[in-house]
Image (tube, rainbow, N blue to C red; front, side, top):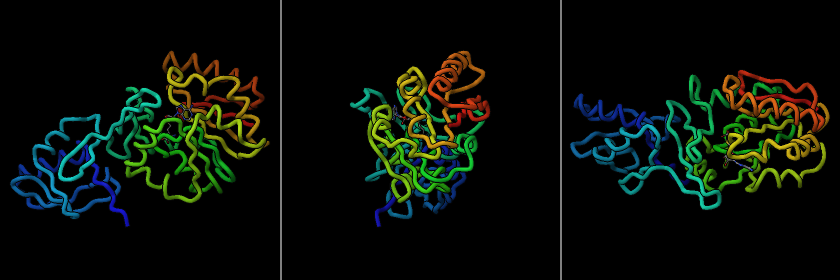
Length: 283
Ligand SMILES: C[S@@+](CC[C@H](N)C(=O)[O-])C[C@H]1O[C@@H](n2cnc3c(N)ncnc32)[C@H](O)[C@@H]1O
């Protein structure tokens, strides 16, 4: 069995420093960003994880100071979980939250974290097109949360990711493990606007379209792309399309354009879903 990497953020580092102040010798904390907990031993020099890995107090203090990075603990040292993607020329990193982390790409957060968290955000996206059944296309893998959630009831989920840097973040994220382990999920690396052209007509029952913001991925909001989504969606199928904060001026403009282009592509009952920050459309 491959040992799971130890990943910490300021959410776990804070209680460790508190425990040291209180003079405790052990404390239960999570070494996988809140998915599970285990007991670590506190010493004068630092902490010892159940697997034997050690970490100095100076490293824990460093983790505690950063609210925008998660850290991989390896060989008794830490490194921030981030990668500069040469493919897209963008920096990708894992953004800590109290629950599942989000992802930052070029400084843009890929999940909603204000007044919610990435998992609740994911559930609201999926809820917009329930029931989920049959074959599902997830156009933009990211950390795989939408693919993982859809796979709970779908027969198969096909998910596409453009950026190897983003996929590297998912590989390290404890909350993305099912993306790689669940046999119902098929991962494809490529540009969704090209990959969709290869799918047969009417081959998906649901499509989850969760692209980055319009300024990062305009092609994924284009009429030509919507026409492909319409072609590959089966009759009676549903599309969820994330667009952004319905109260923001920028998203309002993008939403109006998207609604029009979706209708022009053939979709019916194209409606805003404010609570899911997006649009739902039917075929
Ligand atoms: C908002 S995130 C998706 C979040 C995802 N649904 C989740 O549950 O974590 C958008 C993702 O789309 C990827 N992406 C950007 N352009 C793309 C393209 N043309 N084709 C496929 N994926 C793309 C980005 O690298 C990023 O990982």
